[in-house]
Image (cartoon, rainbow, N blue to C red; front, top):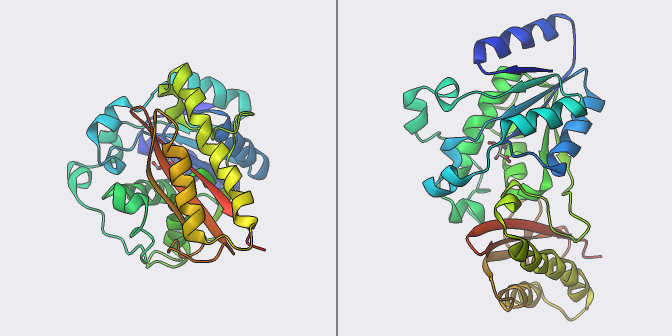
Length: 289
Ligand code: PAF
């Protein structure tokens, strides 16, 4: 496995792979890798000749500078994990290598088709501009056949699908397939997240109420008299009743449009909760049949 830190070195390797007709799988990450990332990388290794993993804490997607500063970083440990899984290249650039001074400060203009008008898009203004900016840059650099993203960031995944399939950039990325990968949970139910590293042992215990409540809501939704609004409110009240947890939002939305829905059919509930100072997200799909 090679660790590359410059765009020039990455491009040289990609060109060599393309010349040999190798298929390329890309797993974009911000490092602090856990078993959730590992499952994406394993898939990329299994489904492609070459697996490239980017490890880059992207400054342009953080609207909160403190959050950026506190984001866990451990490239040494990440590299060991990636080597063990069989990744071929790790791309770990500095922000200066990735962006020009203008790019770092400009607002990346992109038509999100309304997908950014809800949930994370409202709570973290500019966040998805930064995500699309860095992901499109990675796609141009790596020219992957497949790119792997976790469903924990469901809204991000919807926006990336939109970017690849329906935006003015459609066609730009060739035959790129976006591969959706299911949430990986601890046996306790807690969704794996790099941010879990910032939880104390006690907070981690407290955080279990989030997934527990989401799973309970599947049963609440099965009651034929239950409305979406009622289940939504019950999730918020149940989580908020746990000392140490504070819900920022819980919204049950349509899985495609991400707009509020009044049916459980094709719906997903997306939650953001502060567990002490740490902002956690999770989601649950309702089948509604
Ligand atoms: O999901 C993440 O870790 C990041 O948003 C991503 C896709 C790597 C872009 O920085």
